[in-house]
Image 1 (spheres, rainbow, N blue to C red):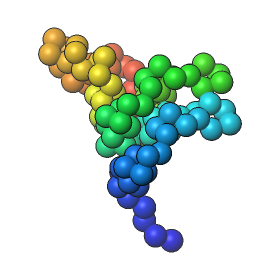
Image 2 (image 1 turned 120 degrees about the horizontal axis):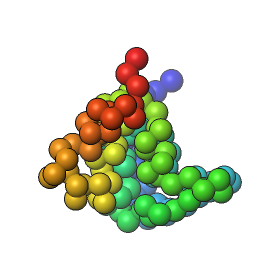
Image 3 (image 1 turned 180 degrees about the horizontal axis):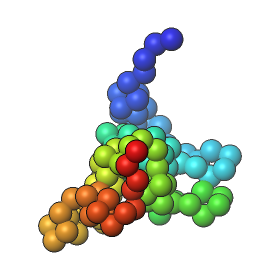
Image 4 (image 1 turned 45 degrees about the vertical axis):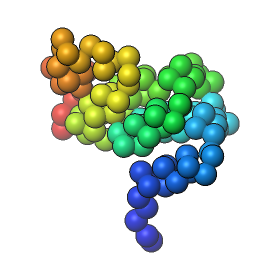
Length: 110
């Protein structure tokens, strides 16, 4: 089994014209999947390529909701949350968004 560089794959697909908002059968978008996996570089690339931040899966879940509950450790989730533009505007007053959320008990460290 070969290791896959998901960030490079994401960038190559975007460069080849892949639809960054293509949804699967459950309405899940690539941005939601990247958030779920805690893949901040992919989240950054997808947002830069114009991925919709408002898209909802069939269950009504958004990428931000997935990022808050997403995979990886607390640091990976914090890095993913830091990629959301509408959270970045609050960074100056609050510091790193992920740190604020962690301090508030949103993330569990294990």
